[in-house]
Amino acid sequence: MNDYKELVPEFYYLPDFLLNINNLPLGTNGKEGFVLHHVALPPWADSALDFVLKNRMALESELVSSSLNTWIDLIFGYKQRGQTAEDALNVYHSLAYEDSVDLDAVIDTVEKKAIEEQSINFGAVPKQLFLKPHPYRLDTRSKSDISQKLDKK
Image (spheres, helix red, strand yellow):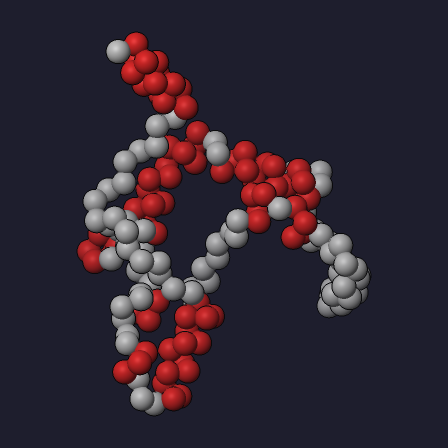
């Protein structure tokens, strides 16, 4: 079974989601029996804030910026469906696509519930927005160069 994960926006701006600031009783670790409290951070993060800031720095890095268009093509673009999706190994269960079934037309309540549960548990592919390859993002240096050239005209 495939397991698809995504990072929610909080990973890039809100360190609070990693902290149990209300001291909720989260139980214990089954194996070792220690009390669960805050999220255990990787060794490279000094704190929840440091974790979020480093994630944001990585998200805004030149490496990510230079390949952002590829991600857009897979998630919202021309590689989301059809042969280009198959070639990119970017194909999901048929029920994950928004137009795969008309829920209002499904009469069987068990079948309707199963279709809804599929989406709740495994997610849905977003609406396709682009039919052509997305352009590369200009880096800030390029934007500045372009702005300077435009200002001179």
